[in-house]
Image (cartoon, rainbow, N blue to C red; front, side, top):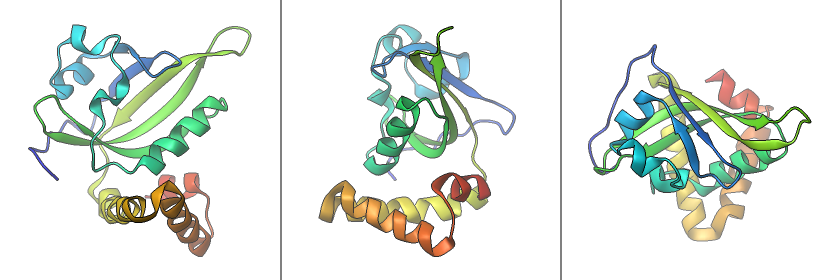
Length: 162
């Protein structure tokens, strides 16, 4: 991975909210600090401004499919900073709903992942990226589906067990 790895405390949480299109509407102080951007650079910007090229597209596909259905998802994500560094997070992403149950945006709370989890996720993401480069997202989906089948677990069960 290129750039300097940025870390944050085990008891700290990165929080952000987006609109339906993924544009940032809120970021807590840690989100702003760790991203390297100023608050006014983040608010209104697409959340993908933090997209690290070492992050498999498949994981974002799963994330968006899940939250657009009104469900929560947990995922390990590597983000990039404005300065070209990177940071890993264990994200819990949920849809935000109005009083009638209509999705009006998304809310993400992220914490520091364990080294044990990253020891599994980093090689998995490397393989998924290889598959995406050679055969597209469908190839990485096939790899992940096969892995989950072999383990006899769902994606959520796999992620939460790490």
